[in-house]
Image 1 (cartoon, rainbow, N blue to C red):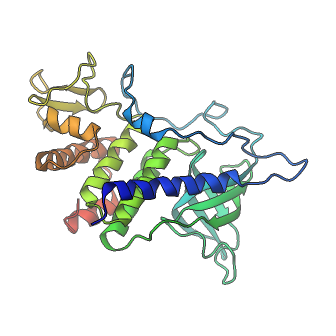
Image 2 (image 1 turned 180 degrees about the vertical axis):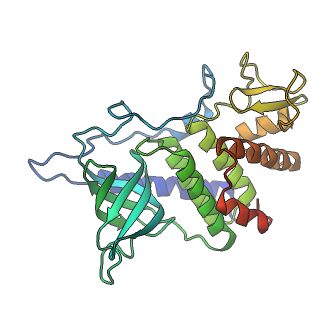
Amino acid sequence: MVTNDVIEAAAEAQLTQLDAAAADAAVPDGEPQGDARPKRARARSSERSSERSSIPTPTRPREPAAGSARSAPQHAHRIAEQPGFVLHSYPHRETSLIVDVFSRDHGRIALVAKGAKRPHSALRGALQTFQPLSLSWSGKTEVRTLTKAEWVGGMRPLSGDALLCGFYANELLVKFCAREDAHERLFDHYVRTLTRLAHDEPPVQVLRSFERVLLCETGYAVAFDRTARDHAPVEAGRHYVFEPERGIRDAADGAPAELPRVSGQTLMDMERDDYTRAQTVSQSKLLMRFLLNFYLGGVPLNTRQILIDLQNL
């Protein structure tokens, strides 16, 4: 059986390989580079162990306004060797594709892959889901032009139930992530999610972990182990509810009956990414179903229904 240390090492190796591919990007003399960011000095272990000093009230994310700090800068017309993954693609005209990608430093980007449907196109075989890519694009409109896509490699392919879980994660990213809104920590966790699924970790545990990080990184939730009103740590023996527009509160404090009740132990386990307790597995599933359904306005997820039918979610 593959241990957690082996899986974590595989995920770290994949992230390092993506970083190396980005660092190797060369810029021709006299030609501006689209994204002149310095090479990152990663400190993932300290990030996982550090505690937030303050917990703001969770708010729903909005699409970045034109000209805002989160919008793509107008001078960044060319982006080279950006780590990313294909989330979804669909035909465009006779020979091209529109590709929705999730990149590390630019978030979700819509790209037109010209001629990608042609039999001998270099892009045809590269634009596969769940495979790490090095992507380059140009343009300043909403849909940019893909100029290069190279397979980075190093990740096991998904199959069977793991493949369906991967599509579920992709659908969540499309639904919750605004375009051109970077989420570096979420990108890294997505890589770990694919790695865990590829190594046959229990899908339920992997998806609960991904859902929690997704909600936290996109602004729908902040922390699962502290109350929203006074930021007090939850207690293992007490019961709580998660109000979508507020956060965690004591279930005995006049909480609406329609909110799912969960134990403090479950919330603590979720924050620690520990799903070894049977109660944590069952209660976290109910809580996440409720929260996702609320934030999506009741619109069902296609892949979730398939997974429910297969009794994997």
